[in-house]
Length: 171
Image: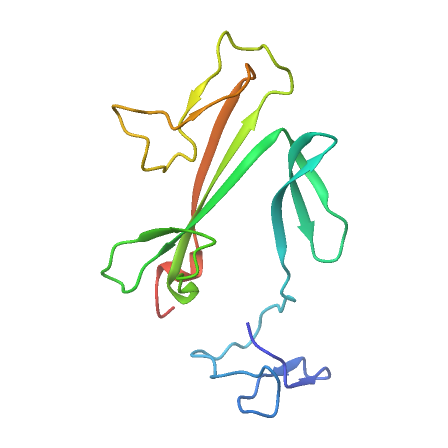
């Protein structure tokens, strides 16, 4: 990302000068020279769990637009980020809310969702689950750290995603 310092619409050129004249400004020049391409405005999409009429759901908040319910009966969401201090270091995982995260070293993230059925009395007994899936309390000998408080069907969905432009440094 960079801040445009001047725009030459006639020649379709964008300047991104460094220096203190522009706030917040650009701190360095690009390592490569690009002759063509597309420019996209940055945007933020946020996902969160909200309660609506006594039921929890996963919502998308897209800028200033109203929140949109994506999936109902998502009970909880946990996020971790993977940091890698150097190319030869191993990835260290931390909760995304940890104050000690160095976001310049984040190379991956993982998300775990706890989802339940809308109807109760679907299973014979309250389920025993490992949530989030990376919980240290869950082992092969004790694969449970959560016991459901009802007889709904619960599922844990977890995914890990690499941050593409952080995998290979120097490109």
